Length: 252
Image (tube, rainbow, N blue to C red):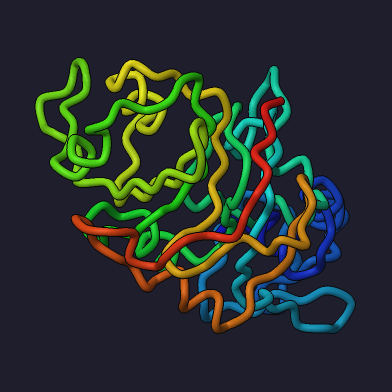
């Protein structure tokens, strides 16, 4: 890890504040001042400031209720990202566990634990993700059968994995998938000749979004919730984790 990143994460300071400490010679590496902010720090090396040894905090696991209109990205030169909702010192540590497109709201996970993130996002683990979709028109009668068989999307060579669909009312459905191709759900409903008006992710694995979190709010996951994410159901058949509580899907 770069020295400036290490100091930032260990102290809670911003990256620019950490660099200023390094430039002033206030950071010692194995007892010697180091002014190279890009210097790599190994696990066995000792980093000190003002006589105190610096250590990285434990891994972080957050759930965020993503509002529409923000990019799921760590940075973007032109548009606001979900990391803008977090303190800068915290955002600098984290990466996104999967993504939601700009017009999609709901459950988004963030962490600095790469192994855990890989378990959640790897296609090999079939991690189930459940969404509430509001549609432009009532679905065709055979939608459940076609989704359970696996649709073949335009410009794709392999069909989708089976998906589970539950109708909530004439225009709202709950759908669970176990992969995440580019704009997959919007393309799936387009293949059924029914555009998505609004889309909200409510569950990943067995972890359901905390209903107390308003759009833009976040909190740390409990140990039980971190484990719940990794309980991944497989299709075909009904949604492996049952119906979700009622949720309002925000269209803008």
